[in-house]
Length: 78
Image (cartoon, one colour):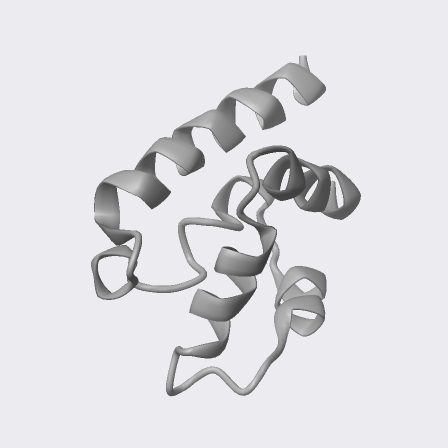
């Protein structure tokens, strides 16, 4: 599912935004590749990455993408 997630971010033009926001998390020493490889739940790639309202894009932006990602995961699992 990792490749699908990267493709999803690219499709929506947010791969670099996601990487940038992920790197801004003070307690996170991992880069994008480490984060993706250590995430346990495909559903939560976006949800657990960072606090949405602390990003330039804000909560609504990431929440909408999170819901779209859930739809993609559900399609793959059904």
